[in-house]
Structures are given as C-alpha cells and as structure tokens.
Length: 289
Image (cartoon, rainbow, N blue to C red; front, top):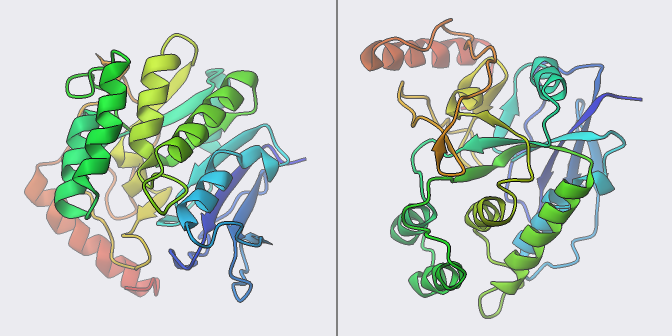
C-alpha cells in the first residue's frame, strides 16, 4: 500500500505530458486522460472515455472533485498538468499528516479576492463579464462580500484527505460549477473562484487547513508552466502574504529551495538574474523550452 497519491489529468489535449523527474516509492502517480496515444515511463496512465466532449471542463472537474475514485490511498495531491514534478514530495505529505490537516490550499500569488480574479479573467482571458456578474450576484445575494473578503485559493495544487468533510466540499463545488454553466456548456470553467467561495462561506470553521504559497510552484519540488506549453511561469521574487478565511495566515514551513539557488529572501533583481541561471541549468538537463 502506498502512502499517498499524486493525480493529474489531461482532457481534450489541453496539456502536454510532463514526465516526473524524481518519484517516490511511497506514492502512486496517476495520469487520467482521454487520449489513448499518450504513454508514460513515470505515470500510471488511466484512460477514460470523455463523457462530455462538448465541455471538457466538466470532465476535468469530475476528476478533480472525485479524486478518490482513482486513488488507492487516503491522501491525494491534485495538481494541474501545467506543473512538472522535479522531486518527490514526501516531505510535504509528511508535514500534512503530522499536522492532522484535512486540506492543503495554495493561496493565490497575485490576488486576494474573488472579484479581483473575475476582473482579471474578463480583461485577459476572454471570460464573459455577464457570466462573472451572474456568479458574483449569487454570492452577494447570500451575504458573501466577494470584493473585500480575502481568501482566494488556486485549484491547481490541492492536498485532500479522504474524509466526510472533503467529500461534502468536493460535492458542493462540483455541483455549483454545474449550476453556473453558461449557455451551451455543462460547467463554469473558472472553478477556483467557486471553490474559494464554497470553502470560505461553508467550511471556514470545519476544515483544518495547511497553507502554502507560490514559492512551492518554483521550488525544488515543482516547475510551473503555462498550460499546454513549455513556457515557464517564473518566480519574480515577490508574492502576496497569504490570507486564509479573511485573516493573515502562516505558510507551512517547507523546504522551498530552488535548484539554482538556496534562498528566497534576495532582492528581486538578483532573483531575476538567478532565474536566468536556472533556465540555463534546465537546458543542460534537456528540459523542453
């Protein structure tokens, strides 16, 4: 029996396969896809028939919010396919288990509130303003202050424990994503806002949360790329101080050392120069560019 599961997915050709750099014998690594041409030397590839080819996001959410349907363990790390695993994450899971946490949430590296997230998506990602206002109106009608409540979490990195509270949480998010489906679709594609709302409004006093920040995506554990490409999203030496349930939070005390340099508290210009060094080292390791 493995101790934990790492699960990712690639539906409708949205991502590229990213092989694991150093995997742990303590973990099972599950890659769910509808593309039967994909094979891997490091992932356990699970092929599925896409039940919703007209809306790949609904299929993605079926996996993201039902991870224990695939996992044989009681702890699951869910990651987007945009993350490359560089090293085993035993230390992260050990921290999670020792703390008795229900869930590990990655606070958003650039924004604090749900309204800010919708504004950025409407301006830069082609998200419908009408759809954003529809969802925000729903939250407002239920007494949630989406413009001021600080608690915005990324869904591309989440650890969950198999228990009743997480089962309820996943069901609530998955159901609401379907309820907000725009015309012609079966789900709202922007699930981090919906999940942040559900977590903040219904589970703030029920979840024991381990908090991580953006550094984990650029650490010795992971490398972060733009969806479907090998274009890296670099760490720029700055990140927002984390907020959880509208209050300042402390990030988990993990080893965030990058392979190119061993500290994070350097001035930003030095960090940017060292990022160039890191890219040079990646080229030596023959990572795609």
